[in-house]
Amino acid sequence: MTKGCEIPDYIASDEEVVELLKSAKTVAVVGISHNEDRDSHKVAKYLKEHGYKVIPVNPKYKEVLGEPCYPDLKSIPERVDVVDIFRNVEAIPGIVDEAIQVGAGAVWMQLGLTHNEAAEKAKQAGLKVVMNKCMKIEHNRLIKSKK
Image (cartoon, rainbow, N blue to C red; front, side, top):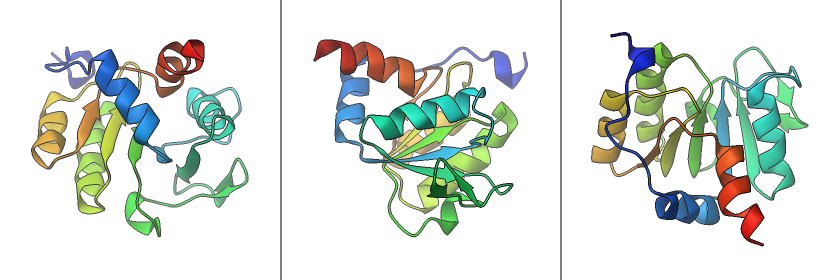
């Protein structure tokens, strides 16, 4: 079985997701694209429009969505509440390690991304973990639609 086909060992409950979405202020979007048609761009734009401070992370760009873009999590000069991952599954363990090192509050693996080993490592380090869910979809479903 390839890593991309893993079934999550752990699925965050709606209550956990709501608590995270309500408490988070700063979201680092790892693997963001300049391309407006890419999900990473659409999600980051949505989050920014809904009051989150979005910090783009991609070594290819200097800025995205009018925000300075950083090459990695270690380069961000402030604390990050959520690391939203838009990279292939092979990159997840390294991103999770970096999220732990910088003291992020949570790692969020986008829809279609699951890495049980990295998720367990993040949880052991005290981070909240969401796998195989889209931050935009969950915010729209659990927060915006309830207003």
